[in-house]
Image (cartoon, rainbow, N blue to C red; front, side, top):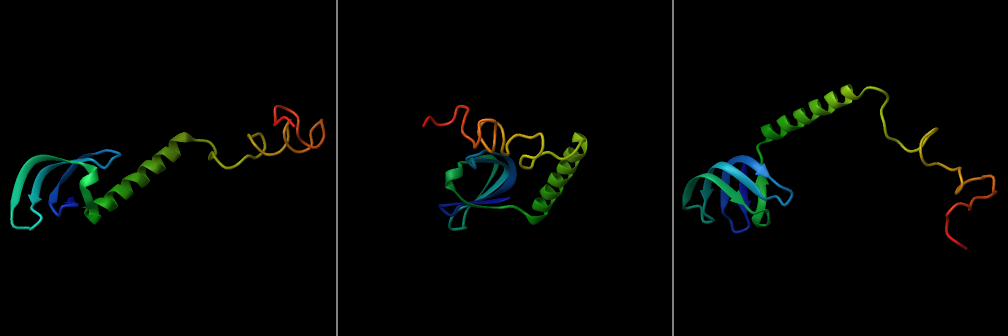
Amino acid sequence: MQVELKNGETFNGHLVNCDTFMNITIREVYQTSAEGDRFWKMKECYIRGSTIKYLRVPPALLDEVKEEQNRARESARGSRGGPPRGGRGGAGGRGGRGGARGGSGPRGGGGGGRGRGR
């Protein structure tokens, strides 16, 4: 992958680690100066996320990651069993109208329970 910093320097290497602040560690790194006239080779490099201008990831790698995510999603879906979960309310679920606070209850017309004191 290629990383360009805000100061114009570029780094090419293999991504090892990335955190939520976009701090990254790359290995087998080729660094190029902002002017493009000097090059360095390093075994490993840590780059602070706030200095990064952009990242360039090869399209083949992106396709591979998408396929892996789809496989993981399919295997997770198959291992759960039973009907799909989620949605909003429904019979036997939480929510909807009824009970002490909503709809027409034994107290008539809502209210009741521990609502707002009026």
